[in-house]
View 1 (cartoon, helix red, strand yellow):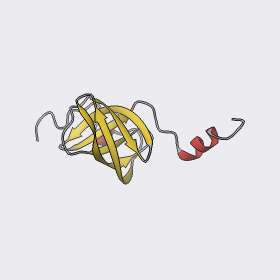
View 2 (cartoon, helix red, strand yellow; view 1 turned 90 degrees about the horizontal axis):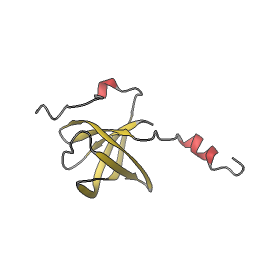
View 3 (cartoon, one colour; view 1 turned 120 degrees about the horizontal axis):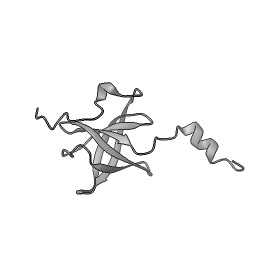
Length: 105
């Protein structure tokens, strides 16, 4: 494993919130690569783990799209083809999102 692989400001074992395991297909893109398929391995409101077909440099800003929803964030760690993403804005939990869409809110 190269020194670049685990370069990070926030390694997986230093997470602020535990992540839930996931098996989601996503599309991701960054400044040096177009939209391409990736797999989300785990997720929480603050970030996720993305497994992709190629390695992306730590510090890269990326966009992720899953089931019609899009979010963005920075690659904060990488281990081989797995990448830790720190979302630029935390995801809103579904019950809260439902309340925000109610008329009169």
